[in-house]
Length: 417
Image 1 (cartoon, rainbow, N blue to C red):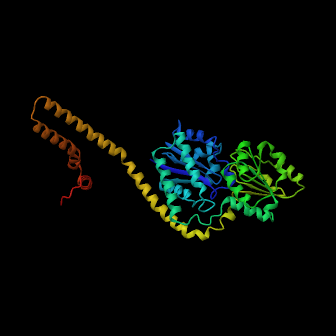
Image 2 (image 1 turned 45 degrees about the vertical axis):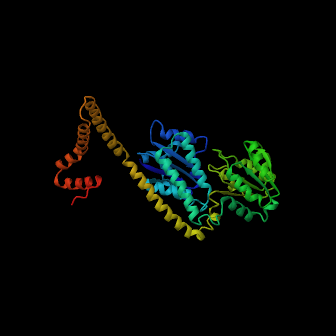
Image 3 (image 1 turned 90 degrees about the horizontal axis):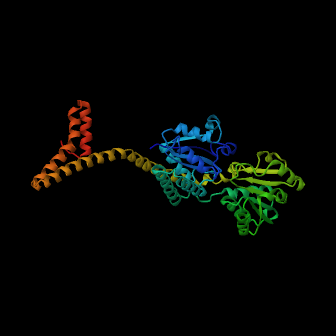
């Protein structure tokens, strides 16, 4: 078993790169099937794809080929991705998974959403049939470590979330959120969280637009807002001062032309926009307009990092827990390497047992003395079991014999002086 992880995240790559290697939910099963399929680049695979990271965890003998696959699957050259890519073999991969699930590698230190996203990644791999013994064990240990870190430390205390940061930035543009109209595009978990924070400021109007109007209506009803189909976006956009979007669309939903028309209708009153999607929902050129304040997930980093220093002691504690658990996991991996030898050894012993048992049964059928038959069977088994190690010791040269003697003494728990 060869554990390997590779990927890009908000530490190593800007959103312009991350969105190019993201795996939307609709293509994830195909990607898992491709990497574990005919080419057998990996025996097992799981993909974690969020707004801040795309990571591939796998059991592979070809780590370099897996890294190239990540670029090639998205129609990119490896040289376009490798400057931003981290490659993590064995214990580094385990340590990284434990840190990610514990919120130590997040833009929002100690945030809990990533743990749920990792669980979803494992479940999707399980459904795709690409989660085997190694990755199943890795993820189960990962979830256990994350729980231990959050229970034993204050890593999540006073966490400033991405959704709270969006409100904080909006309040830098507008004196009062209560006087503004807020539009949300999407109806997923992230929009739900952001809408909760904005709703607490009691804006004068809330609307949710989504491809599925029913989902938009369900979310809007929680906050006393309105709902509309995504197709209505060009008509309603100009009515809103604040726009927050987070969808799984592979292409931008809010284009430059649409925003230019909305700004003209608003007579150039400013608009505040937060794009939490990767790939981005809002065309980058929108941010160049004079009356638009556009922020992406990367731009929110300044706000969410403000409380990091106060939790450094918790980080130190968490890292110590993770270090110990990585050691335990690697020890489990090492024991798995011995499994084929143990299986062969037991098969070898089983063949000898059956052979001698068959001989004994035939002797008993011939009417031979049972005591003599048992004695002969036990002596034959003993001789066969000890023949190979005895022969190896007798045939070895002096240096090799000394080493073999130590191994045999340990294997058979011998205490001869």
